Image 1 (cartoon, one colour):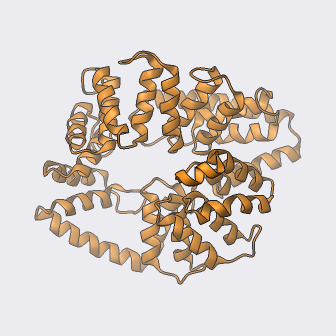
Image 2 (cartoon, helix red, strand yellow):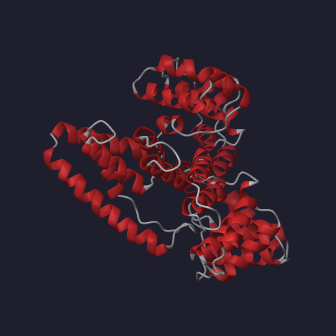
Image 3 (cartoon, one colour):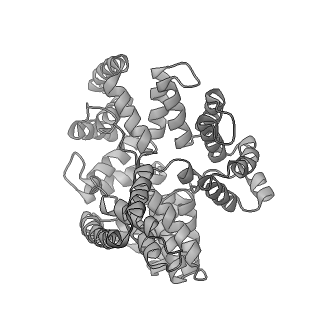
Length: 439
């Protein structure tokens, strides 16, 4: 039923959300506060967690609000109170926090602390799912497959959209592409038809449709891969100001995919994207400064841009920042800070980061030697499913080849560890794997 790949509270505690400038000045280092809260939660010190969370939540920090809601929902350090949990989840959800939206949607679906309401459940779960929240995607899919009322309403809506789309309504065409293209949400998934409707809307100048069409052309999703055509549609969306399209077009120029490789153009489009705070553009700039392509090589600036993207949750930025701290490039070498960023990427399912953490725990280099923790990370890395959609920032061949190599290393190290671990250690390691996957 569920295939969630996010850890629960500790992942949230180790992930930076919004930071209020005034509050940041008071606590001096919001990142450190969140790390401290995550460590306290892991150790069962809920009094400390509450002491750290409450001021942040009261001041409007979405991460703290969601985390406080989790404490009330579970009765950790406070009396269990589902109504209070809903209150805090709602505060975070209304600020766009994906985890808060997921938790609020779940409350409406199951009727915990609020009257059961499938319409509200779908609303909040879809908002979280649109941000890529894996557990929200799973619960939304389950709800749509097992709730006849919701499915009936969706079919009626689809019928109306199809009628309007055929008459040339550009918004209906885009909406129909969205409905058919989100296979993780519904059994009506049809990538080929989704591309058809995106293309019709894109031709009428719909910027989001142009972006979605370009993404599918880049990923070979419902249409043959065609970087040249993808570049055309990215450019049209980018010219309309869409930051994601600007960053993606910059990546095409950086890699020479569908266009002549041109680092100056890549730099220009990345800069336009980062003016809007786009994380992919920030990582793109970081890569240019690290490699010295199109700009003078500058590891310090590379770290600055990687950090900006990493703080927004970009997994490639987190992995890159971990590598910079490990190598002492642009920052003083710092194994603990390196491990911190690798962990954040690993918590999002980044295979390379999981293998690195496993190796560090296995050897005791830079981290305390811990066979149980090492086994957990190796097992998670070894059992990663092959990616079905390839990120534009890495070619399919890079992804598949590196995945095979990393999984082979992870399996070998995991099995080597298992041979020297006690039965009790293996049980604990497998428990951690299970908890990491399904909490």
